[in-house]
Image (cartoon, rainbow, N blue to C red):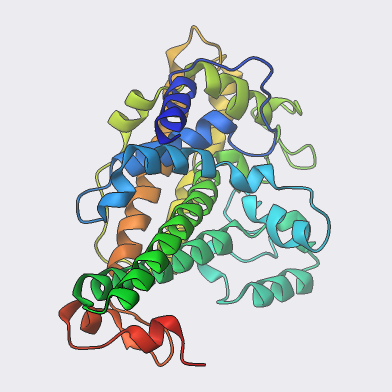
Length: 344
């Protein structure tokens, strides 16, 4: 099954479309999200556990990177809490929705505080989106996953009791399945952050309620045609991988990093519209394909780095109850059994 999944992913990422497929109009399409997830996973170093670098796991991340789009429209409160996580609508100068909205650097710690801030500025929460919080939440969940995995893995390797060792192994395998799912979700939202339309009030053609001095398109087909059909026809995995910037792992602070990453994506909104006006998004023009490649590569590189940083972060954490420190379990100076199996 893993071989079949990998073959299917390679087929799609090579640009061969399946008959009857369609592309969603409100995120990178299936091709873009798969490419970001697969490229990031293939770029992981051996600092990360071997199970993440297996072909089956890489293919699984490609598919799970689509999941937040596939589960949209379930009703309330699901949609309020999840569907608005795919975007944050920023003005040209980087404020959420209007001149009264906060900048990304000014976002409060909690999403509830963010909601209150928007309401005080007469901004509808559902219209603004909360992509920065989705990325931060996804990163923190992955770091906890890794912390638990590291404890289970170390305890399993040292355990001499066969029954306990078997339980550690089963729980480690459960955690590996959760890690793949949670990387898939993080991949999706990081990928959304590399698509300029997910970061702008001009998310589907230039906003008709704002000045348009350069005469950019106001077509409501702009968003979907770019990230869906055009990306599917032009994006290639090997080219995206070659365009990925080098890892940036030093001086990490999550909130500042998310603000910097999304601000960089916002900076590509006007270049996109200028290129669209110049006719760059046709298959015969290499400028459009290059634009897609660079944006996908930015998303893949950021995901690669966040996975690595989450792994490192996990080594500093304590998990379970009574809590045990990951570093102490890995060093063999703490017994993880009670913390992992639960003492009630």
